[in-house]
Length: 101
Image 1 (tube, rainbow, N blue to C red):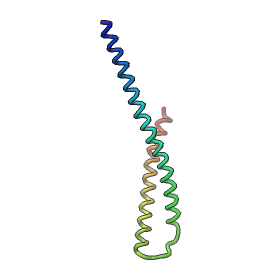
Image 2 (tube, rainbow, N blue to C red; image 1 turned 120 degrees about the vertical axis):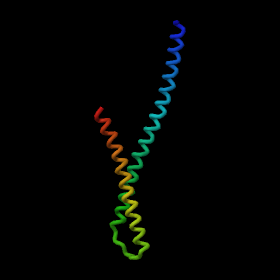
Image 3 (cartoon, helix red, strand yellow; image 1 turned 90 degrees about the horizontal axis):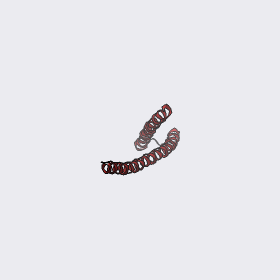
Image 4 (spheres, rainbow, N blue to C red; image 1 turned 30 degrees about the vertical axis):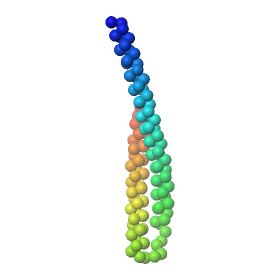
């Protein structure tokens, strides 16, 4: 009877060590992903500022092609802002959850 308990205990310890390793591995992947998202938000914000600066300049050539490019740049800027806002909301929700604990 004692041998069965010892074998079960050893198997349980081995299982716990394996699970701890897997948990640490996935946690480090999540932290790396979070760091990459934070870096991307900064880059997106900088790109949005540059595009916004370009869009404020007056247009000197009034052709349909130039207007299409300008509209495309505006749409891209709006998408960049939407992405940055959605990533920022995820980050704010994570901060709120951490503050509640």
